[in-house]
Image (cartoon, rainbow, N blue to C red; front, side, top):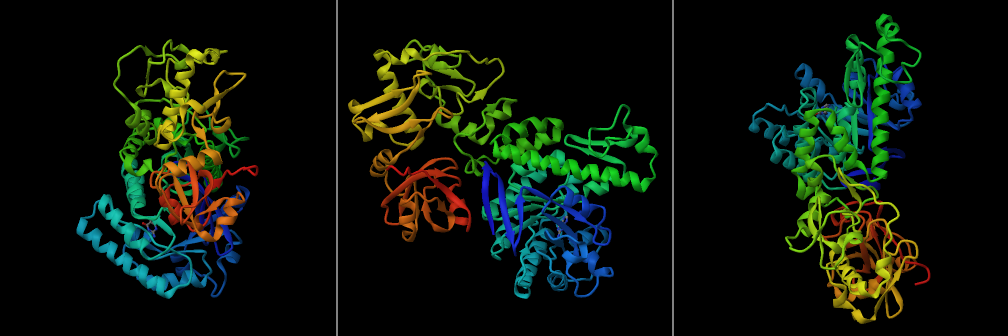
Length: 596
Ligand code: GUN
């Protein structure tokens, strides 16, 4: 069972529970050679990793003690995934161990995540050949499902053909599993063909349910992780840390350094701390390999924890744009990702905890920014204000603002991402006072502003649903900005200082409910839980019956029962597709206050 705990667009921090074992994603499963587990298992424990992957084909060929549990054998009680020999077939030619044999073996040894024997699609293979491989992989999936009660991973193949990736993903997900590794990408990774890998990941995701766990087979270089996880990967596995170490190659978050070519000093690492460059070079080979391997695994794991931090801060896009500048082919991969606008946009909230930092023309093509520009960019004449905060410099409510996003309404001055963005040449004004807004002269401006933002956010003008002569404002004592909008002397909505969008309360929720047709702005939940929702409990995916397609993560939402009776209001964590596809986890936070 998989659920989302935090998210930033398509990237998510999730929790996967399989048979009592838990891993938190995004994460890496280091590849362990089953007969040479040390010192790596000890390091995995030290780094507090929750899982690993090992190879059942190597186990089966080796001297694996009959009937022994793999966790005992490896002395590791976390999540163990096993691969099936497909990669060995790709590397060394046909193997005789068939699908059923490998699946049953993985079952017997007590693997937590069992991989079927997929057919590896080579990136330079003919379409027809790939297609017949996909069909065979699907057949093996069916066969494995019949034969095993274990938790099965169904790989998605399809080479670099977009349509075949989508088709393979749809086929494999029709088997009803949850865990989908994306296969056939190692040869592309080795050639730095990051653009192809990103397209493969996103196309595969298009054919999968949003609630699937997406695993990238062998995409283990940390410099690729930011964009890999932004593409929506949840798990990677990798043996790069050992493979590179064997060749004296040191991983860093921006690339690879050859030990032989370093002139100055070793990169910072707890594993190199007491060593000079010379000492490391002169070490016996085995010892050196172990130290470099440990360093390599360490930087790999640290990069993932950095990415998790960025997801929590909702800062991943800024981070990715910074990190893809390490290599032109990473930048190319990011540009390829941006071309999937229609798909990516659905996962993007309308405001984030972090601002939009401009780092190049790609920033304006981020789905969140592009959606805003498509909706709000207007051609207008009038006085143009180019300095922030725009409304401070406005002399007249009819002025317009020219922003790096285009010419937009002055009314969106405080709204994300207009105010919460930074472009070269923009400086923060200090000690700005919005005192002028206390002057009745600006009252109409404030009214229009509220009306405009309301329409931008909820798709209906506030003045259509209330009498504007009965509305008033609570202005902040400190900043002079609007804090609350009142209606007939009751608070109706609050303008959030953080993103310049409104928060609802029960009064405004009722008005919106009456003004907008079902299912607009709504999540409809099972009648059975109505009383819980009315008490302020959060909405969990398994109770969601229907939801508005236009909802995005972070939106204000009306919570209704399946007969459209208003129960409460809240804030979404997921979009509609996710709410309906996930079986566990939260869909929306209930924000009903106990006083209402
Ligand atoms: N390891 C790396 N690539 C693959 C793949 O495509 N399939 C399987 N089963 N394992 C892999």
